[in-house]
Length: 78
Figure 1: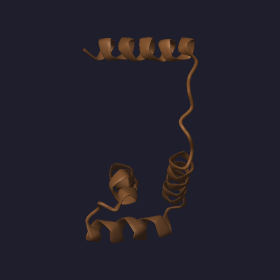
Figure 2 (figure 1 turned 45 degrees about the horizontal axis):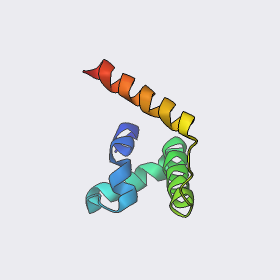
Figure 3 (figure 1 turned 90 degrees about the vertical axis):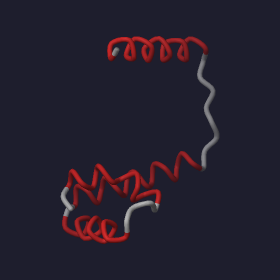
Figure 4 (figure 1 turned 135 degrees about the vertical axis):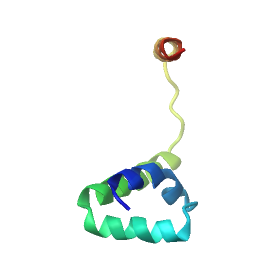
């Protein structure tokens, strides 16, 4: 497992859906790669933080700007 593999499988690893063999390979990589270890650790902590928080209401003008930006981004990809 290399850094690219960690990033590719990060979601499956955190969700506990990664194949056991790949899980071992990923965890071995994490013991050797401080960068990947920090990414995985911070991702887990961020998920925990947001899972335990209440939704935040956005002001209407902010919501409108976000929706407009998303529509424009999707239009550009078409």
